[in-house]
View 1: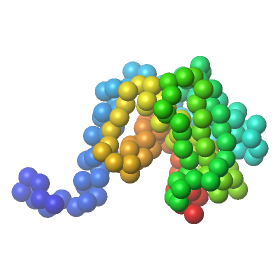
View 2 (view 1 turned 30 degrees about the vertical axis):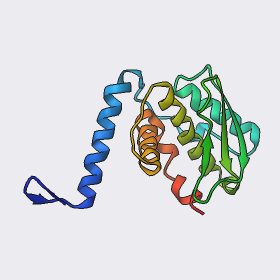
View 3 (view 1 turned 90 degrees about the horizontal axis):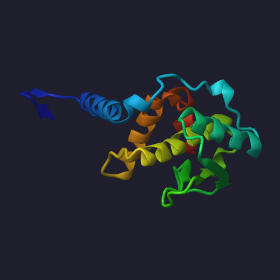
Length: 161
């Protein structure tokens, strides 16, 4: 692509886009963010109780203490790690995680962080993206911005099975 009289590489375009997204987040929710990291060691995903507790811990980290996240496992579309129900505005929020992730606790935690970030964005009227892929990338950027970056690195390794 040519911009300003010089050829730009795709990687430069991605970086510029990501910086725009981070700037957008800072302008819109920067005042609400604690700028601390949620430590992965605090979260467990070995049984349904530990998974529910991890969802609760993530929600509390994001100052969403009033929300109850109900987590279940179910078959998802190919290359989909999870789904959160955003149609309803109530305090009970349903998250489905791909049953293929059940063997990978890190993938479960990564999916919880990602899906709960979707709800955080909805509550705070944060939206960006013209298609599903762009929206999913923006959600991961937002999760990192919110302090959950250490929870996400394994996500793509395990969930694209």
